[in-house]
Length: 527
Image (tube, rainbow, N blue to C red; front, side, top):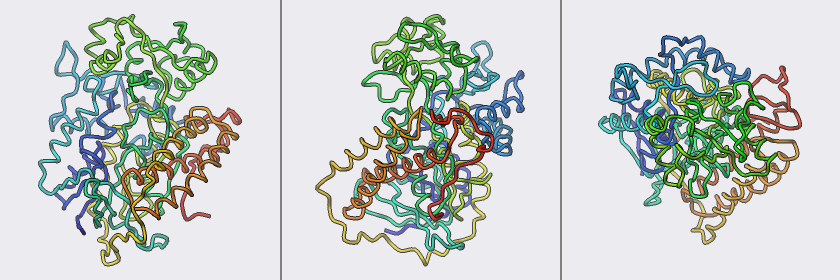
């Protein structure tokens, strides 16, 4: 089946929904979601949205905090734009019905939290389920817009970019598989927007939902979009440590409210690693926990909040409290066992100030993009801010994209592919990628570890490439292919950076090198 639209939005998180809502009065919108539209990384975001609203806070302070966290790789114009645009985006969400937490003694004033790396309270939140509230209100609005057509349980296979190596190339849509019928559609669009989120599933331990397989980054790279800074993968310091918890995040806001990190002997250790202790930036906290675990041989540390008021904890963190109780942990009486886990990809498809990638007609917003806001390390709660701001800016310019020539589009050809009788290959390769990425390209790296990952990755890519072209595609195979592509990008970027900066720490080059304060850029067609 062949479909046409003005805007094809791939992904249904905060960035995709915000964009779709903003352009619905400009043309026909088709919105793809791999599962139900409600399932996204946004929906699991706990902490909140960083923005300057408090009387004791300033734009300059937020800009400075962001630049400090980014370790010399932030693009200052992007940082200033996002920070100054933040309050307007919050007001917009409130106007359409977002219910953010307000102060108990003043319901008319937002309760602003504080997280690591921030010099003031500036985190707008909806208790500890901010992302879920944003998805609720945005999805309700977008579903009511007649120009928007949702295709749930549909997954993009590849972007359609005729003459992709030529100067006049342009993205004109995507090939899409219906996961339920396995029918493949050709969707042609004047503008294609990648809002597919991150790629945390390349790691064994992660806070990401299962849908986060780096689809947008991989598809964009395959058609010639430039990718940057994939070595900067953020590991959240505190994921609930329990065999059945499956990436349950313990928000940074817990430390912001006074939580203390302790080793298994109940000794507070952050003072040994950073002057800001528990409120240090995430990369410092994650490395500190990793070092303590390696030194002790233990497989977790503790986050202790038992010294805080019990009723306050239950009110401020209702969902975290309930999740802990499900696993037999009363956080008001017991320390929470935690470990670091993959949480956010600071790299992605290179974009300009409006979300336009280096391929005409193709935009990337949210975690799929490398905008220059985060640099070498994302400041806590700047991600939802980035998604809102860049979706708004992309929606302002996307209607002006030059109309493409759909005549060059070809429908999907299956070739000589046959049904597979060896699907175990997919699950085996998926597991193997996640394990060697965790062991060799994790929180602490080295040249030797990266070379080991490189050798295994080369074999993996060849095996997946052969399997992809010989057998009928499935969503599991597509996700594996994308995971392998993103893992390859992370390894390649990490091998190129011969220093430690932000989220990239290597024991062979433990210091920052001033001359290397520049982006690591990869392009498929660059020798």
